[in-house]
Structures are given as C-alpha cells and as structure tokens.
Length: 268
Image (cartoon, rainbow, N blue to C red; front, side):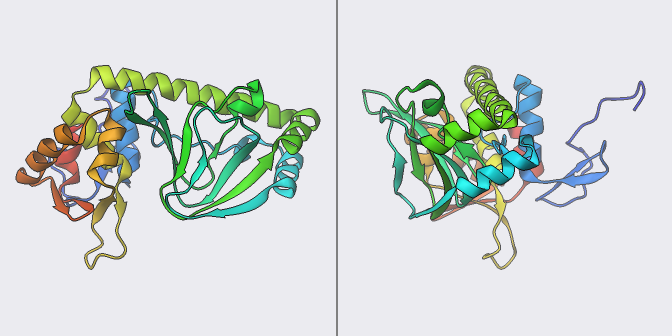
C-alpha cells in the first residue's frame, strides 16, 4: 500500500450489514474469528489463545503424516465427558476429528479458568508425553467429540523415526507458550467489557438452525465468565449493557450478535 494509511478492518462507512466486516487490504469480507485475530494482534502482538490452530499435520512430511494416521485409534466421547484430569499421569496425545474440547485449570480454592478451546484438527495432550510430568490441565468435551488417539508407545515410535514429527512437536509447544503469554497480556491490557466483546466475536458462528442464519454464540454465561477470567455476576451486567446498546440479543443459552461492527469497536 506504499506510504498510505495502514489497513483497517473497521470501515466507518460500512455497508456490509451487521454480520460482516470489509478488509480493505484483501478486498474481501472477514469472518468473525478473523476479526478477533486482527483485534488481538493489534492489542498484544500475538494470535488469540482461542482461535490459534494446533494442527500438526501441515508440519509433517508425507511419510510422517501417513505413519501418524496409521497408528491413530478413534475414540468417541459424549458432551461433558472428561478426557483427562489435571494432575493425572499422561499416556496419550490426541487430535480432534469432530466436536470441541476445552482445556481448563482449577485452583485449590475451586476457581476455574479456561486455558484453550480445541476445534477439529487441533492436537493436544502432548506435554506430559514429552517431559513425563502430570497433566497441567483438565480436558473436557464441550460437545460430542471424536478423537484420534496416539498412545505413548506409538508416540515414541513417531519421535524416533520421523524428524518432521519432532519438529512439529516443537512448533506446537512453542505456539502454546506464545498463546499463554498473549492470554496474560490481554488480561492486563483489555478491560473486562472489551474481553467479553472479543470472546463473543471469537466464538461466533453462523447459526444454520436459525431462520435468518444469524451469528450466534452457544455458551452459558458461566463458561463465558471462565473464558474472560471473571465471575458470572460481573459478566451478566456487561452483557445486559451490550444488549441495551443493540450489539447483541440474549436468548436462553444463545447470544445473538446483532451488530458485529459495533461489537468489534467495543473490543478495541
């Protein structure tokens, strides 16, 4: 763009409607999670710890990828089931095939914080196989989940026989370290209202079940509170204010985003 103005994802004269934003640099509409990543990079210089991808497959050479798929065993779990608990010994790693998995940490006083949210193709559960330590978080199914599971024996076989698998492990662990740093930075830089707005943008998906295909977040307020490092009692008044301002609409266990550009400005 030469010496002109820097690219912006927010157009003050936006005509894309309430659910999409126009990216002047790419001349295309942005998906909600792209908007969230742009906002987070602007405020912290890092990707979102909720929207970053943890798929090892792009980092594996064809031989290693084939070996990974050959030893992976499928496992199906129901929503609410625990995959492993914090402080358990670790003997497996996982790749999400379908569904959503949340990684949480629980403090001795009972408080819980959401560490990461995994989506299809993401890999997790690696650190305990690398350093033989206990599980540092709890992994739970937010929905019905299908996993590919690699046990310790096959994990060691992949490490010993495939250099690109070792490289992928280093990339995966480095990415997680960066995102943890970004998480703490955001907690200190952004206000609670901005963090809530950002989480809603990150988690928004077009609701195909809705007649008008609105952007919706299907998440209890208690989960949203855990993702923003706050209590449900402090999150609820902010959601009510966003609703009064016309940015969202609260319906049962669903939050409808009615004005994405305005919610984006609230997250800045």
